[in-house]
Length: 168
Image (cartoon, rainbow, N blue to C red; front, side):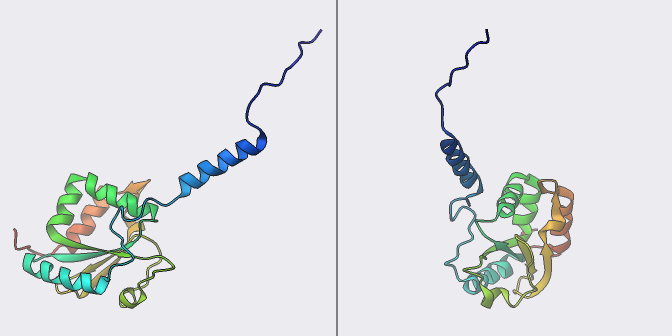
């Protein structure tokens, strides 16, 4: 005689599907607003004017980083720069940073329209200390695996760093 199978109490199919959808939504949800400093309420033109003063006083250049708190690669870039001592030191020593929020509802067209078109985020524009445009950098070219390449990032930052900062 075959053993009789008994149903074991457990979640129904609809509960499993609901749990799966909830986990998927949680995994795909954007991080909390304001985590990285891409504030849709800021005026990037006014922020740039203030940074020009700082850059001229320090003898640095400006990196305009376009993205948003919704952007997974923006989070990866932020963690990479903060977590890599060499890259963080180069970035902070030679550049001022302006983070400009972009999303379909807040595209900052008036500000970003003066620079080459962006195809992916984050995107970095290099400006001279006076605010004049120097270079447009697709950050995909700086990636390696699931993060960024220390060698490529060092090369990028070194290439665009001013010859001398006033702190050298």
